[in-house]
Amino acid sequence: MNMNLTLKVWRQKNAQDKGKMVEYKVTNISDHMSFLEMLDVLNEDLVNKNEEPVAFDHDCREGICGMCSLHINGEAHGPDRGVTTCQLHMRMFKDGQTIYIEPWRAKALPVIKDLIVDRSALERIQHAGGYISVNTSGNTQDANAILIRKSDADKAMDAASCIGCGACVATCKNSSAMLFVAAKVSQFSYLPQGQIERKERVMNMVEQMDKEGFGNCTNTGACEVECPKGISLEFIARMNREYFGAKIVSEK
Ligand code: SF4
Ligand code: FES
Image (cartoon, rainbow, N blue to C red):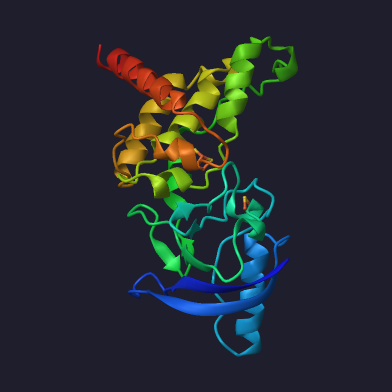
């Protein structure tokens, strides 16, 4: 089925501009299209009319890179569950519907242009601890030869599925990045390879999170609901335990 839609899109020339919602019409949109393909149609129309296309972030278009961060009708990544904006299909909408499209709203993720936010705060948190040390002396043990309990490997993989999209921050009423940071801390904490920096990792990443101006977690759980990768709140509890454990040792 093909649809005609009204779009209310956030347009903002640059970081200093106040920005406003602008209305557009798109016609003949197939329900098989992805949400980003629908935006491509809008941009083709705008370019044909010599108007400025809408700037929006995307890369892989298959739910991997975490770039396609949009608030759609007030929900991070739109009305579907367990998908990113690039995986959202137009069949989730109805012919004649009005769709509101906005960038993430959080002080630590400021808008650069239209629907694109500066996500470098998330990168800086990763840089503060999202790595491991590997002995490259020539005696390095093959990772496949290190035994890891299946339950720990599964948990590490669950945590590692975080794509850093920032939907948790955008959804949280406090703009907290706890779910993101908890996933990044937890994925290493379950594995032998992550033990060398275990204590300094959690302290450095939490400290960087606070420096970047993200809010505090008040356990409302909205982040878990909107996370496209199903990252569980249990990782936040694990990160809190990691953090207090590391803090106690460092203050002894
Ligand atoms: S925890 Fe989920 S919502 Fe938050 S950045 Fe990772 S994948 Fe995105
Ligand atoms: S474009 Fe990569 S996750 Fe959507």
